[in-house]
Image 1 (tube, rainbow, N blue to C red):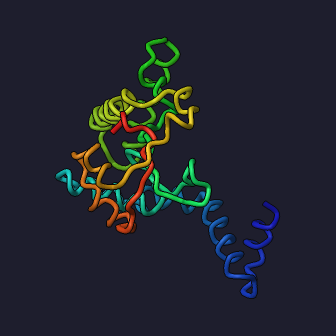
Image 2: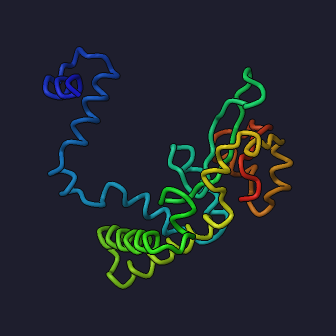
Amino acid sequence: MTILRNSAASGNPQASADLRKLATYYTSCMDSAAAEKAGAQPISPELGRVAAILNRAQLESEIARLHSMGVPSVFGFGAQQDAKNSTSVIAGIRQGGLSLPDRDYYLNTEKRYADIRANYTDHVARMLQLVGETASDATADAQRVLAIETALARPAKTRVELRDPNANYHKMTTAELAQLAPGFSWPAYFTGEGRADITTINVSEPGVS
């Protein structure tokens, strides 16, 4: 933290490129006045892209684009060590798309989980209002968000099930992945993600697909 503060304060043009980047990043994060003034404007192009989605192909394209930037959406994707071949790094797909910690937060009927879900939808509604939605639209859309994430949570594995490495190892070809989940255009996704060359992938939770 001291290095960041000193770098931001000095503005030394002779500092390394990486240090200057860190200083700029730190300064922008700490400038709360500018953030308040800008509001949602910096992310308006991204919100516009999402609002313009009209069909499955466009949705799949946007998921690939977000993943290519490191933004998790719907499911997880990335490079991982082959658990049964330490000399190999392969692609991996895993369950995802949940904002709350795990599936229990969506499916458990105990009061404390129900209260968390209620607070979560209130939070989402407030965020949507901050980007310009009316209170009624924000409330309705927050419920839709919860419904989508609940649908993703139902087939998801529990925390205990995720601890079993063998149960989460399902190495296959991309052709086999396409047969497993034919409703998703995997070749287009891998191309959009910038990895059209992928031929082998571990699908951690094939039941979720």
